[in-house]
Image (cartoon, rainbow, N blue to C red; front, side, top):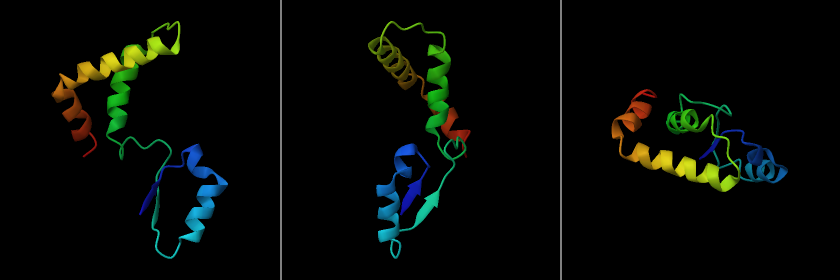
Length: 89
C-alpha cells in the first residue's frame, strides 16, 4: 500500500514508473497535498509555526534551534499533543 500525498518528490517520473510497474499488487491512495484532517502532525507544526512566525533568524541554525526548542516544550505539554490528535478524530 502506498499513501501518496502529491509531494513534489512523489510526482517524479521514477515514482510514476514504479507505480505502473507494480500496479498488479500495489494499492495507491491519493491524499491532498495538505490534509490536516488526515495528518495529526499538522496541528503540532501549526503550534510550532505560531511561535516562530515572527522570528528574524540570522541563519538556518537559529531557525533549527527555535524549532527544536518549541518541540521540546511541546513534549512537556502532552495535553497540547493530545488535543492535536483528538481534533483529527
